[in-house]
Image (cartoon, rainbow, N blue to C red):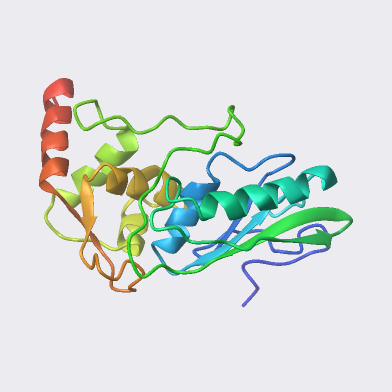
Length: 221
């Protein structure tokens, strides 16, 4: 059977991200969604983020004069309870690959749930996503799709949801569906004391049911 994540000279880390590996472009600053991914890994089984790599595994690199600044941002912000609460100090390290600099960040699994927070001030404003609105505002079509699935009453794991939606990207599932819904309290973990448990599943909360009823009233569907 062929390797599903083939490594080449131009793509030394492989071509595909996975449950424990994520690539991010970071030419001269920390990406706006960096801590979204940090929270995702903390709340699951941990993982590694590599800055300076495109989604397809191509090395784009980090500017040499920005490497140290980005490392300092990561260390300071990860130890700031206003960014991660409880804080989880991260230790990024740089590495030169194919003549370009990348920054590797190993994120451990957390023993407790770490909530998502707003993007950092040092992040690229063009990449910064808006903070999720309160439940009184319409939920996104992606979150509503997840709520509709969980409304059936059965708690589902991330693999079950991925298969139900016929998605290929765990990253998209985490950042577009699961974490926005968790952040707003629309869904909850079945094993809240062990967020990294392989038995972890998600179910609808009362707040999620209310949001779904509201969405149906507004759209008539």
